Amino acid sequence: MKLLSFAFALLFLVAALPVSAQQKLLSDPEIYEKDHFRKQCKTAEFGADYITRLDINNDGLIDAIANHGAYTCDGTKGPACSSEEGCPYNFYLQVKEGGYFMIATARIFSYDFIKRFGNMVFVFKMAPKYCDRTGGDPCQMTVRVRGAKFVTISKK
Image 1 (cartoon, one colour):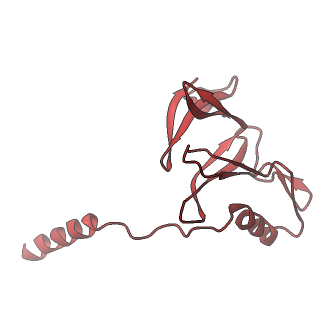
Image 2 (image 1 turned 120 degrees about the vertical axis):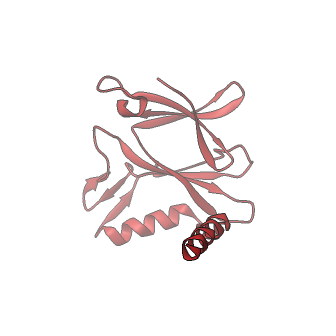
Image 3 (image 1 turned 135 degrees about the horizontal axis):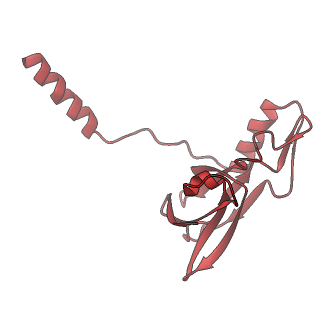
């Protein structure tokens, strides 16, 4: 019984400790992403819209979005894309200390970054299943970046 009590106490102690593992900051997500695909492909080509740089979380720092539909690997454009789900996009935030970290990956068809009620928000066009629907037109999910998280505002 004492051994079991000790095990539970140890479990709670470990659970209470702060998580010390953090993402390594990237000096530039564009270089990081392109290097990744250059290792995966014999020939990797990147379109002008592969990286978009804009302030997505309203902190005054320019962030980055990588569009995996805008690169070609060994002659295949957007190899991870599908007509059912769209393409992977990686979203990176820049930090004032220097560097970037990834906050999200999403499979989307496209997005608009617009001002709504005074705040900049993404309107993602996604597979209907992300709005709890089957078939039909793409789902439109409106999300805002708050701090380092995506917050869903609406789905339709």
